[in-house]
Length: 276
Image 1 (cartoon, rainbow, N blue to C red):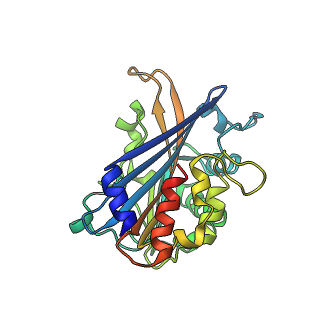
Image 2 (cartoon, helix red, strand yellow):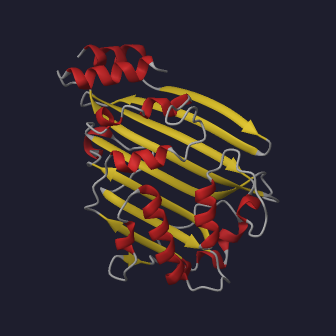
């Protein structure tokens, strides 16, 4: 109970921002904390990397300062324009907790828009993409390559890239693939490779910045709700949208029971906050 009172008394919302840049690359970290009406505490960590879209051009040698090279390779080889993937354990209680920053269903969810005019058809590229991304995140996304589990919605899951092209042929749903695995189990085997995609790493597995808060994975996964996300899209650099940048957002949302009398729960929250 002490940690719950501490949270409610000291703050309602805390946001910590870490920013660094290297040449044209930009990297930003944010932490959002919100006490919930049920006595739980909602944490959302967001890691955003913005780079030039030239990093996806083939036959060019690139220097990867902040953007993960493996993501660039997977996106480039499969002609992906944007993608969104989440790995979630537990249910978000909308009636008691309100609206999350980004909602996600239980299990694994992924949807992607593919570039037109590619030599390979979209179905082949989708199968290759989910296999490679599943191997990267240690998830069973390879089960999403069948027609039974995959669809191309007509009206939902519109492109989130902020581009003039989004208003034209890019919204043809034949370039969209959506799939979900509601029974996918999410655990530390998913968090470990996900963390390795973050740029702030020093001395092997020791992370700097907010990523260092994720090193205690066992206690992290004792939370009542946790959700890993990864989103890639293009954004405009100005109001006229004469040029664009590539934005990779990686987020972790967790809900911790701060009403519990278990030392692990309260100790985790206090250590989490004191590490800021």
